[in-house]
Length: 184
Image 1 (cartoon, rainbow, N blue to C red):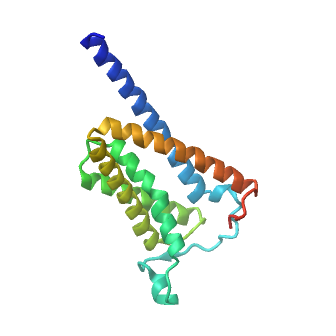
Image 2 (spheres, one colour):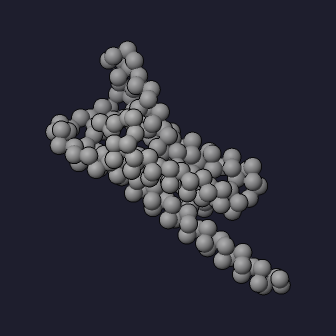
Image 3 (cartoon, rainbow, N blue to C red):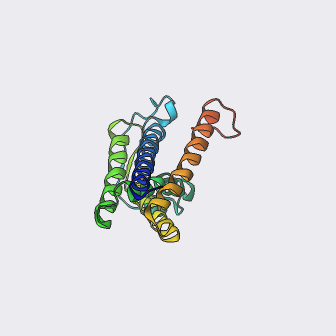
């Protein structure tokens, strides 16, 4: 293969990989909205009151305990955001990436309050942002391990594709009441 054909092939592969990353990111954003804003399509008329919690980890001080499960889920659900930000916005400085992750979390929390589907919770804002930063750090570590941003991106796409398929399957099974757990 001559050099010109090799460059064109490499460019075509990069374009396909970038498109795949963008599609996976869009699927992630839709799933995030469905889970956090539309509560998996479950009726949420029970949320008539809108609450605001401006005390970080306020439940620790009120009840003497933290709901570690909810905090952990908030971190985990935003890890992919950080990975996608690392891939899709590689030209941005770290501070801009972190601000974008924070802004996405702020938007989610604000929309939950506005739509009366959840409280605006400063703890969630913190844990969501932390999850995004952890995701970005995972991407950076993957990039370092592979020694190449493009190879790291392909690996992230593979993991994201598998995770997306798994999440869709689990959400379908949950929605059809085929799992031993129930969404409240």
